[in-house]
Image 1 (cartoon, one colour):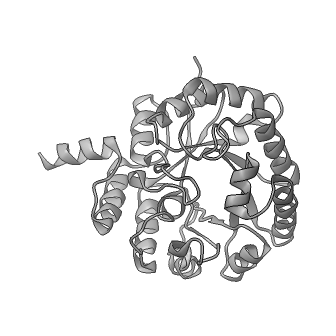
Image 2 (cartoon, helix red, strand yellow):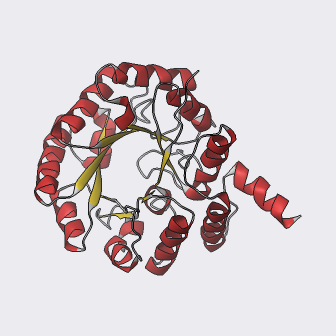
Length: 302
C-alpha cells in the first residue's frame, strides 16, 4: 500500500471555517488567527472571501484582513472569489492567489451561485482568464462531489467534466469537496480513481467535511490513489451556509496527528496548531471539535 511521503495542508479555517459562525469575528481576531496558523508552519492559509456581505456577512472584512496580515515568505494567502467583481476587489488589495468554485449539481449551483452549472463554467472561465492576465494563480473547488443536500446522489461524470474544465482553463489545482460530509472511503476512492484516469491526480486535493465522522477515513483512502493535498479547518470550525446540517471541515489537528503517526511529513508543528485552535475556540467560547486537540490539551494540562 503506497502513501505520499509528504502532504500539503491547505488551511481553510479563516474562510470556510468562520463563514458559517453566528458570532461576528472582528478583523483583528482573524488576522491574529492567520498569523498563528503561519507560526504553526502552514504554507497555504485561505484568509477570506470577496463575496457579497449580504449573503456571507462574516467575510465582509476580508480586504481589511488581507492588508493587515504580516505576510511571510513561502506562505500563500488565497482568497475565495465568486466572480469578476470579487477578483477585482482581491487584486486591488494585492492578492496573488484566488480560489473559485463550481458545484456538481444544478440545485446546489443555483442556491450557491444563482446560476446553472453551465453558466458557472462560463463565469469561472472569464475569472480565470482575467486572473491570468493579472498574474494571479487560481485554485478551483468542486462542491458536493459525493452527495448533494438537495439532489442526493451525484454523478461522477459531472464531477469529472467540471474538474477537467477547471484544469483546461488554467487552475493549477482542483479541490474535491464533500460539502455535506456524506461520503465514505469506498466512494471517495472510486471517484478519485475515475478522475485520475483523466486529470493529474497530484494536482487534486481532498476537501472532506466530517458530518458523519468519515473524513479521516476518506483522506486515508484517497491518499492511496495519489492525492497529496488535504484541505482542513483549525479546531474543526465551519459548515456550509447552503447545506443545512453540514458540520465543519475535518479538523487540521486531527489530520496532522494522523499523518504524523503514519510518518508522512507536513511541515506543521502540532503545538502551534493547538495554540491557534485554542485561540479561536476561546474567542468563540466553545471547545474545539478536534478529537486530537481535545486529548492533547488535556494531556498537557496534566
